[in-house]
Length: 90
Image 1 (cartoon, helix red, strand yellow):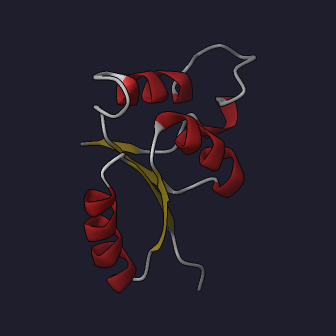
Image 2: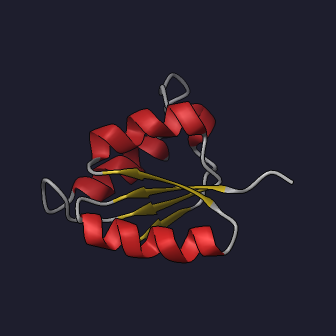
């Protein structure tokens, strides 16, 4: 059976690791990104089933900008195919 893929986008490696340990112990495949730019790149590569997204990273609102790009209603958005991925914001 295929493991669900979860992408954690957070600049705190301790937070990423603590979430990773819990999720992997429950049969999820976990990927981590340390900022929004890397997270958006990985969304295209792995097409996760869920994104866990920190709001405050390099900037105070970086997480909101990432979610805004993923939820863009622009039909020409490069992230249009990923707009239905659930996002859990920390």
